[in-house]
Length: 382
Image (cartoon, rainbow, N blue to C red; front, side):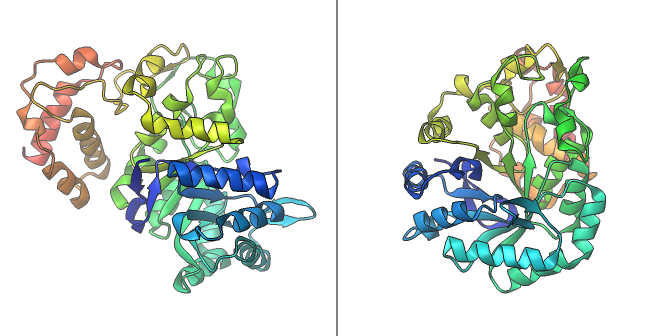
């Protein structure tokens, strides 16, 4: 298992994480079996959005004796009421829900306190200026949460939260179909068939700006809905008109700027094993570029996807990373210090490009790589 730093938090998370859906409606023995497989496979990050008390108690029991091996992404504002899940901003309910979570998990803290499901700017403003954020900051001060996060499907609301400096982690829905769609307060609209009737071209600019900003300011992204609820794995259901593999979906998410971990929606030990197997998959198995280039309803023409098909460069330039650093700096309007440092340690710089064009011939998306290398050499001075 490979591990990545979760933005500026200092927390190391496994590239493959675990969504809590797989723990639902299972006995303690079944939950323990999943946790055993996570420990064996090196999966250390667990999302806990579901407030179901039985799930919380079973997981807490299964974590006993090994709690320190796992990073818990626990959600505020999600409670169990009248036998079902409810999202709330009522502080009294939020407090009771969080304390219940700690008690049932048999722990005195969680690594990430995630403000749950903020999908509009108005909701973000309410959270930012209200009791929920004050409570989250108090929990952080008391070391009951290690850092503050937020979950969202809307890039506009998410970007506002990231730019506020109040959150360190963003749980966001990342997949190649969602990434084409503009922000919407209704997450179901992202999958509306009518929106895919005509060919869509390139990533929504708000989503690109969100990922690049997260990378630049150190907000770590944990990914939900990487498989689009499974639809992307089925040609008949996929809005793209072509099926992808689980490895391709995971790899796409992990190559977006800022992303640290992909939450697998594994509902069985076998499905969890399949996600963990990504770590040992070949580059050919992970490669999404050819599949994307052949999608009938989507085109990424001229847009760098950081897929790595440009490699190998005869001069040894890491073209994908150089392009990523260039895009991060263009988006900011200046070179962020962290980007400058990362560029400086590259073994070979953009200025070494001899314009042979080998990379452009291999790029499935027709990116003007030589022009990008010239821009990077000018911007970074090497």
